[in-house]
Image (cartoon, rainbow, N blue to C red; front, side, top):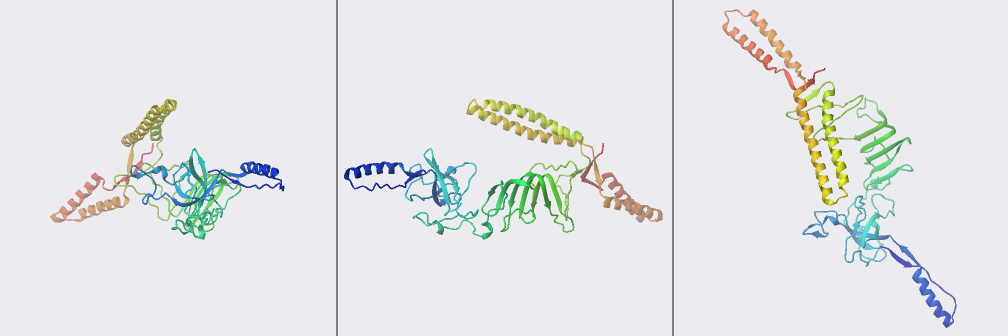
Length: 415
């Protein structure tokens, strides 16, 4: 909270009683007006509310009060006995409800006071260390430096990330960062990286995991197969690089490329869950148009309802809540409609099953063998003839039931 500090001293060098009286009055007036004004004040952190299992903060009807999540407790640098606002409150809330910089015990934060309440904002960067800025000895109460450790002090995490002039950097405590800048000085770039090493420069090959989103410039991506060359990726691109990358779609995953979709790997597996199938073949324009037509119609209805909602937003909370509910209903309707479209597509789509070559070859060989045996078996050999007839019946049954077909690998018939 703001406070002021007297800085001046006045001396007239006179011993006359009258002048001394005037001097004292003038000095008092000057001292009352001359001070250093501190709108922002330093606050040493001694506790922070983040662990819901060991919650020691305020409760609401016997339950954790989420209003105080991330709040801190501590001492003022200017006066360790001074209270926070409102009077009697011991917890200081974060200033920004959206972007939080949670300190650790022993760090110093900057506090302000608005509307009768104290808030904390940034962490004092006296060491320019993204990991550890603990500073003890600023107040004469408590000993935050001896608190239970809450962060690693590994030198690996102590360096600011390497950047270029004009870059905007968001850096975490453990050598991870988001860089909003440029690529090769010619295109915009966003890098989200966990560096995983002591040197926090940007290196796609050495960093632990990276996401690059760029419009311009080039990036060299090394192929994990040492026998293959590296790929130089240019233009508008999104690059994901890590030891393991998992894309998990709970409903649908669509990969599409205007010119090429390439899958390379040591072992490449394409599998389906029980009851599913693998569909191959030429792109079906009619199917894509059907899918988009349904979504376009519902999207148009959604946009119309959204327009009504925005107009109703000025008519009170009840109308606002109703508009939100209507939009949610339409959103759910769109999900269900897409499911119905997929059922219709399954009904009219013409497909061909894939032949199991091994089974089909064995079946044909069996036919040849039975034909040869039938030609060489004497008519008087009733047992031999019976076995051949049984084998022929099994072959005919296989042809009738098409048991040499892979029913889960389906090819779309070319128009």
